[in-house]
Image (cartoon, rainbow, N blue to C red; front, side, top):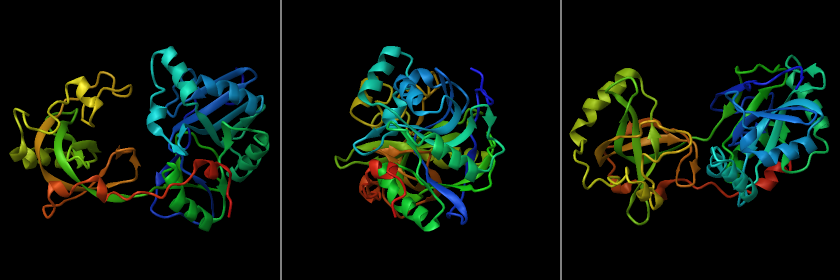
Length: 356
């Protein structure tokens, strides 16, 4: 491979803002794996956000990218998997598996798509110093003949349209809008774009915590919600605390400690088969590997209000944010019924482009 920009390349990033800023290019924020694709003739390398290769996990994309992309190019985009008309991050995560046979089977069951949204190099030319508006024009020309599962990400400079996207596209599994200054050059690993994500709140039951890697202080709080059968399901964690606050939480939560854990709703967490019928903390995954997933059990009596962006199935997609303790709420009030359900929206309509 001999391109003006060689792998690995870390993608340009975005910082969070509360409102959609004016005077920019707007795109949907895709919920998938960020990927930089290098193509040189018959060679294709798919790099992750960290620079590590993803090519072996998405064999079906290699052939489609060879068909859709210019002979020599570097393109920034997102790998996604759609299921029942919306993005499905859990199915996407299953691809990170050491067994080639399983990867191949999953690629046939749930083929991935590639959403292209920036052009870093074309032919012998690096476009890193080229303003975004010019890179976008060249990307549109380069992908004029692309067909699914390779897509050109819809983009607009109409802020009102971007606001409508923000309000409706969540129903297709997207998690916000990205705003990009029109004159922005491409700066790998720099947070020069802007992301606007949904934020909602929910009352959750704190049923345990994990210790921080630095010592006997709280690393993360384990959160639960009751389902319609009355079972407390593990839905995620709340983890962003100053170090002083992590130490204070140890003392604050000490009266709720359960040892032994008999009677705790998640007492069977260490038994692998128990995870088949319930959401419990501690399940091993491709991401955690050999990481210590043990946790400290608490009586599920305290209610915590957290902020979250969106759900992935029956759990919080990302780490929830601490808002406040709710002594005025009972644990039994912390059910899935309180969660706002976004209106369903077909992913195919998102990919069709900026209809007004």
